[in-house]
Image (cartoon, rainbow, N blue to C red; front, side):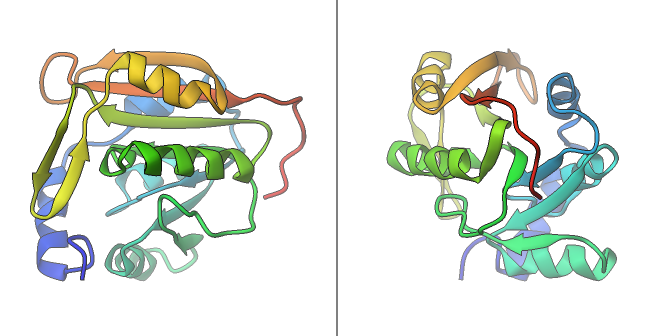
Length: 195
């Protein structure tokens, strides 16, 4: 059983994450992703960012933790939720944007590249990705979870293989410039969404 599937540890995470959300990320994203667009959130956790996304978008939440999916669905029975692994993203649906807030930092370099390649496939032409990471170098392991830190140059190189980077910005979440977000666009002509 994974860290986020265990009710006790998932509840510890919920308490720790209280008061943190992706308002900054969603505000930056909204300058490029129009209201009403179909957005997939990877790693929705307790759903704070999904709630914010739903204020603007047709948002689909996803997580690999059945605990988080069930918890959110119990509170929001009509919600659109998928159980997805952040690397394989096994769905045949298409989206205008794929979003995550401090989720893809659990992936090593190869897994991140595979995830971005799969996200590229899930996006409609002209679609966007918006992802945040912890800034730095190396890797930490806490409670059996791996946390990979990234520099601007690393993210520019990794995302640049699949996307045209619009913004790559360092920002503060806990400490000065401890985080980075990447907003990027699929290299293709604009096309209508098929969500």
